[in-house]
Length: 424
Image (cartoon, rainbow, N blue to C red; front, side, top):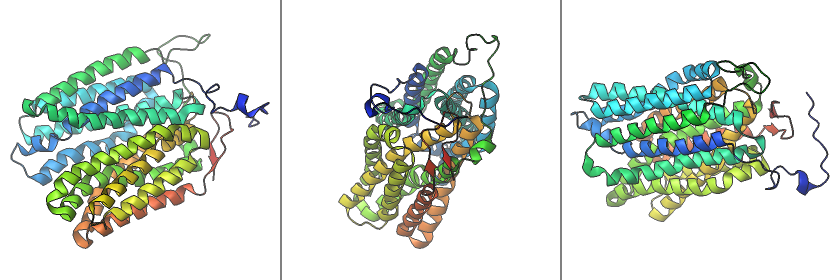
């Protein structure tokens, strides 16, 4: 396979990052972005009421927390299955099935009559969630033109972020409806979203012109062993784990507790504010992160973003004044937002356009989920024994290990679409 790129006659005419040469976002991906917003909107709608709904069955705070963590645990356990199903059945079928499973799980949660039923039904949702997450990432990797992979990753992440911000706001407006109605609303909207995605993506596995028609054409699958040979993939697993630990785990579990402990009467307000302004910083970074990634490669925004997020996380547990607490929360959001699209684009580079990467994407998702599950547990133990300062410092230090993993990576951005994007 040749790696010689054509010699440009002028930097303007052949620059893939210029607006004139940049391809448009495929229609299938625009559909997935819209569906991601609906899914995140509903998730944000029920997330604040889920622990309260659990405690209505006469259980304590610990049992209510299990209702939240069972979702992530099920995602982790079934991620390999989702990868195999994606390789075998194709991304559209697995995506739609996963969304429908989450829809059924959510509606059943609304009908739950006791704690055990709620736990089982919520756990079912984790299975569906990992199915549509892995298949969506695989489909985006397969269909994304390499020149705009960063932009597409930013659009997809931004849709989830916007939904997660708007969901709790919508949920507060529905507070008078009780605990069950939001589950029915979310479940119904997922059924509609699944139908739209099904009809929009039904042609994405049709045989190309000149090939025999059938159930589906054979799409080249990237073996996991090939991905392991790319330094980019190994570095992404490390940074995905550390980001899952910091952003999806410790931030959600310890920031609210630290705010209450450190700022007394203002802590409850600051707990919600910290999560909101993290999202603001995250969203602000996403506006530029995608294009920055396409223009400058994956390594640089990951190094900058993960460094900023790690230092902010390591410092926040020691602050004793509100303005600095807010600034560090914003900086952590900016760092995470800057690295997110680059990390997703790096995985898409490893898979390559036109190939099915179900097992590869499932492995990456497992690394992130694993960090988000054990992060709160271990950091919480440290907080109990040594204080919040050390819990956040250790978490931030772990993030810097992700930075070290990316330092030796060398990007070869001029290689063909199915070639490895880094050597190590």
